[in-house]
Amino acid sequence: MAIIKQMELENGIIINYHRVVSVNNITNKSSIIEMAGYTGKAKREEEKEKTVTGEPMNVFIYTKYLNVPYDANLNVNTAYEYIKTLDEYSGCTDDI
Image 1 (cartoon, rainbow, N blue to C red):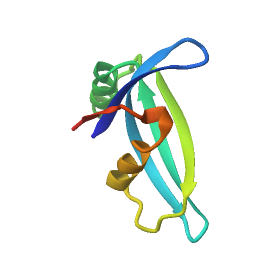
Image 2 (cartoon, rainbow, N blue to C red):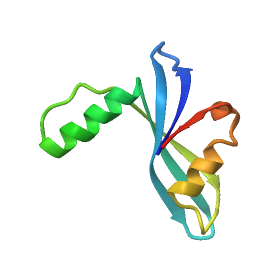
Image 3 (cartoon, rainbow, N blue to C red):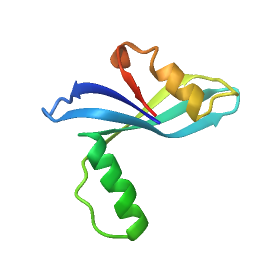
Image 4 (cartoon, one colour):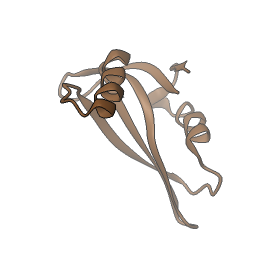
Protein backbone atom coordinates (compact mmCIF):
# COMPACT_ATOMS: atom_id res chain seq x y z
CA MET A 1 0.00 0.00 0.00
CA ALA A 2 1.04 3.59 -0.57
CA ILE A 3 -0.51 7.01 -0.92
CA ILE A 4 -0.27 9.45 -3.77
CA LYS A 5 0.04 13.20 -3.27
CA GLN A 6 2.31 15.67 -4.98
CA MET A 7 4.63 17.60 -2.67
CA GLU A 8 7.54 19.90 -3.37
CA LEU A 9 10.53 19.60 -1.05
CA GLU A 10 12.54 22.64 0.03
CA ASN A 11 15.19 21.76 -2.56
CA GLY A 12 12.60 21.82 -5.37
CA ILE A 13 12.34 18.07 -5.89
CA ILE A 14 8.77 16.90 -6.48
CA ILE A 15 7.70 13.68 -4.76
CA ASN A 16 4.29 12.12 -5.21
CA TYR A 17 4.43 8.51 -4.04
CA HIS A 18 4.65 7.84 -0.29
CA ARG A 19 4.79 4.69 1.78
CA VAL A 20 5.13 3.66 5.40
CA VAL A 21 8.55 2.07 5.77
CA SER A 22 8.31 1.17 9.44
CA VAL A 23 6.37 1.64 12.66
CA ASN A 24 8.14 1.70 16.00
CA ASN A 25 6.51 1.90 19.43
CA ILE A 26 8.42 3.09 22.46
CA THR A 27 6.31 1.57 25.21
CA ASN A 28 4.08 4.10 26.94
CA LYS A 29 6.09 6.98 25.43
CA SER A 30 5.58 7.50 21.70
CA SER A 31 5.12 5.91 18.34
CA ILE A 32 7.27 6.66 15.32
CA ILE A 33 6.21 6.26 11.70
CA GLU A 34 8.97 6.20 9.08
CA MET A 35 7.79 7.49 5.71
CA ALA A 36 9.51 7.32 2.33
CA GLY A 37 8.65 9.61 -0.55
CA TYR A 38 9.50 8.85 -4.18
CA THR A 39 9.41 10.88 -7.37
CA GLY A 40 6.87 8.38 -8.68
CA LYS A 41 5.49 4.86 -8.45
CA ALA A 42 7.89 3.66 -11.14
CA LYS A 43 10.86 4.54 -8.92
CA ARG A 44 9.33 2.60 -6.02
CA GLU A 45 8.91 -0.39 -8.34
CA GLU A 46 12.54 0.01 -9.47
CA GLU A 47 13.66 0.03 -5.83
CA LYS A 48 11.75 -3.21 -5.11
CA GLU A 49 13.13 -4.92 -8.21
CA LYS A 50 16.74 -3.85 -7.69
CA THR A 51 16.62 -4.78 -4.00
CA VAL A 52 15.68 -8.34 -4.98
CA THR A 53 18.29 -8.65 -7.75
CA GLY A 54 21.03 -6.76 -5.89
CA GLU A 55 21.61 -4.49 -8.87
CA PRO A 56 22.48 -0.82 -8.45
CA MET A 57 19.56 1.57 -8.60
CA ASN A 58 19.05 5.24 -9.34
CA VAL A 59 16.17 6.06 -7.01
CA PHE A 60 15.68 9.25 -5.00
CA ILE A 61 14.04 8.45 -1.65
CA TYR A 62 13.04 11.18 0.79
CA THR A 63 12.77 9.72 4.29
CA LYS A 64 11.14 11.35 7.28
CA TYR A 65 10.18 10.24 10.77
CA LEU A 66 6.89 11.27 12.36
CA ASN A 67 6.71 11.18 16.14
CA VAL A 68 3.05 10.58 16.89
CA PRO A 69 1.07 10.06 20.10
CA TYR A 70 1.70 6.63 21.60
CA ASP A 71 -0.62 3.93 20.30
CA ALA A 72 0.12 0.36 21.41
CA ASN A 73 -2.02 -0.88 18.50
CA LEU A 74 -0.23 1.12 15.80
CA ASN A 75 0.71 -0.99 12.79
CA VAL A 76 1.31 -0.29 9.11
CA ASN A 77 -2.41 -0.22 8.27
CA THR A 78 -3.37 2.09 11.13
CA ALA A 79 -0.32 4.25 10.38
CA TYR A 80 -1.70 4.91 6.89
CA GLU A 81 -5.04 5.88 8.40
CA TYR A 82 -3.29 8.26 10.80
CA ILE A 83 -1.12 9.76 8.04
CA LYS A 84 -4.21 10.60 6.01
CA THR A 85 -5.53 12.76 8.88
CA LEU A 86 -2.50 15.07 8.73
CA ASP A 87 -2.77 18.35 6.80
CA GLU A 88 0.41 17.52 4.89
CA TYR A 89 -1.23 14.42 3.38
CA SER A 90 -4.83 15.66 3.14
CA GLY A 91 -6.46 14.88 -0.17
CA CYS A 92 -4.12 11.99 -0.89
CA THR A 93 -5.21 8.96 -2.88
CA ASP A 94 -4.65 5.33 -1.86
CA ASP A 95 -2.52 3.11 -4.08
CA ILE A 96 -3.28 -0.42 -2.99
